[in-house]
Image (cartoon, rainbow, N blue to C red; front, top):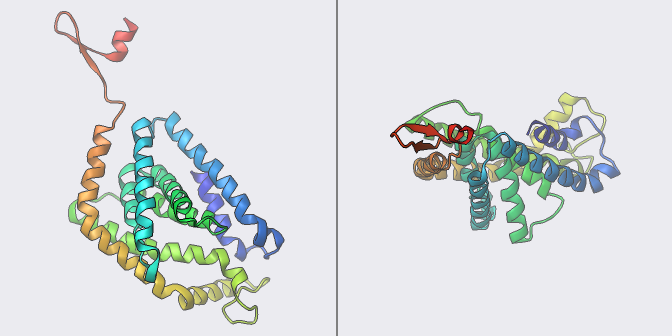
Length: 261
């Protein structure tokens, strides 16, 4: 997961350290997409090997990916309204950062296949949602209404974060170089950063606000019920709970002890 996250940061923030060229404009998305799929597969396999994701958790991953793929067309991004993020936030919170990262990737991949949204932007969308789900798994402990409010606030923040990251994917190629908010190779980092902040605010602040408001409302309304459902499923899906057998004399033994005998 660390390697995949590092690749994602490089994919988004390369304009601040590398001049755009043929590789950046034509081939980078394909390379990023291929490496991303390999790294996501590695994350899943490593989680399985370490017991972090068992067969039931994989089934949950498939179900939630399908749910998110079905939810996404409902918002379709109109006025910034997105309906997939609240599931990512809640799943990452309950099942952990590795699960949230993988769910973000698989959800957007499945959605793109269903809606025909496959293109050079897809790897960046997958990474953006992966970061949203992963960071939700690192939020501090809280309970009750405080937890729901914390998740709702984070959901609002993630709406702006997703837009901020996605804008980085096309900013170097989208404006006339003479524009005061365009990417200009060779500028110092601080000036480049100021240009990008101005570009982000001018082009997508309203759009991202719609996403942030949608996330906040969905998490406040559906958060408590969905958290309870996810946690109940997590408790029932535990594979490593010890299995006890009653012996002839009424004594109990674990499955491992029985095997050793």
